[in-house]
Amino acid sequence: MTQILVRLPGKTILTGEHAAVYSKTVVAATVGLYLYTFAETTDTLLLNINFADLGHSFSFSFDELAFFYESGIESFEHPGEIENLFFKLQKEGKLSITPIENQQLHSAVMVALYLTTSIIPASFKYGITLNIKSSIPLGSGLGSSAAYSAALSSGLLYLSSKFNVNTPMSEIRKLVDHWAFKAEQVVHGTPSGVDNSTVINGGFVKYAKGNPLIQFRSNHSLQFLIVDTLIPKNTKLMVANLNKDYKSGKPGVKESIDEINQISEEFYSTLKNISDNDNLEIAEENLSNLIEENQKKLKFLGVSHESLDKIVSTAKTHGYSAKLTGGGGGGCALVFIPHHKKSNLENVINEIKGLGYIVYKADMGVDGLSMSFSLDNRHSSESFASSSFVDLDEMIKT
Ligand SMILES: Nc1ncnc2c1ncn2[C@@H]1O[C@H](COP(=O)(O)OP(=O)(O)OP(=O)(O)O)[C@@H](O)[C@H]1O
Ligand SMILES: C[C@@](O)(CCO)CC(=O)[O-]
Image 1 (cartoon, rainbow, N blue to C red):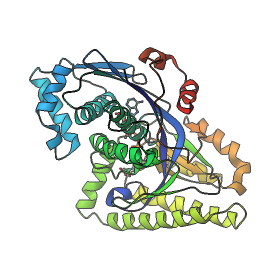
Image 2 (image 1 turned 180 degrees about the vertical axis):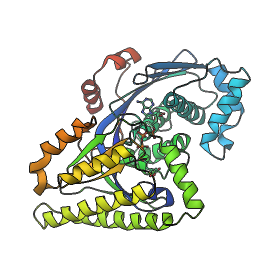
Image 3 (image 1 turned 90 degrees about the vertical axis):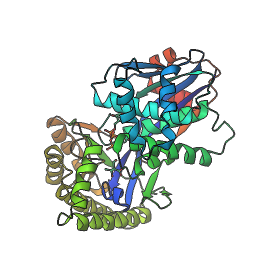
Image 4 (image 1 turned 60 degrees about the vertical axis):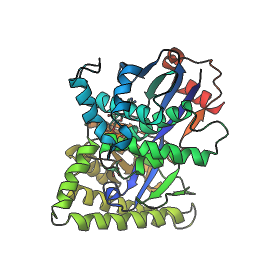
């Protein structure tokens, strides 16, 4: 049987979320929180999906999957059409699965069905089991859906021999990115592609839809706090709502999106040119101001939330700037900590924690897609389920 273990990091958007959807510049970085997928072929002729974090497992027989193949998934104009097909087949009594009330679980199953029936040929001779577990908080703006989409794409592409151990990593990344973007369309409707490209390629990235991704390493270690408001958010809805305002020509919307583009361009050039000993304080002050400006625009665009505003104002009283990161409307905020202002750090952390929010100090700019092929059938869904994240990291390294 064929097995693969895949690991993808989360991401934060430093500047430019939402404007990214309109092909504007966005600056993002990976964060050292990870989603792992262990995928294997089996002799059961079933697609099994085990979601450790959501506490649910699903099974589809190949007879059930045949209905998806027959309905011509490859002719979809938009991958999100999988949802209508799923509801139609369910209504016709062709699927044994009962309705999935939990929206996160529902969209995770849609992605798994879309990717499996698009990547795996109908004539495939084996069953497939996909196991997922993650330390990236779900639905909080840290790219959990991109990591999930990329992890499933990698696993399925490998099991169906679309790449192998000898395929150059640059080719694998490109192939995985192609499918992860389609899966992101299932979850987010009209994503820009920045989330999947960031988590796959790793490091810091500058991205504008339709242009080649620029990957860069800053020679200076930036420090941010990631604050999770624990308020559930819905990126698809936030993107769709803003799009209505954009299309209806609501005053100031287009201008704000253009201004965010300028902010991202300046953030990128400052970050790229920053060095540890050369005008560091001035450069970090500049980054700080750009973050503050970006948040003001995002608030104007209606994608902030009172909990995010509270973090921004709390950070400001301690001399720091902060902004939402990702889809907004809840989820996470970033607080930027310039080196010359570090002395205040514990105070701001304690105050933010006192508001009931979770503070992460994650590494930024970590590697993207990592895989372990050499599992030699030593592993199983059971051993994956009982492995710690540290154990899984060890397997990825070997
Ligand atoms: N550990 C996981 N197990 C199963 N599905 C997951 C997991 N993590 C993410 N997902 C899928 O990704 C979706 C989360 O997408 P959502 O856009 O709401 O959050 P996000 O990706 O964390 O935020 P953002 O897009 O703003 O960065 C879930 O609904 C689910 O479909
Ligand atoms: C809100 C958004 O700009 C970022 C979500 O992480 C959507 C996208 O670019 O796809």
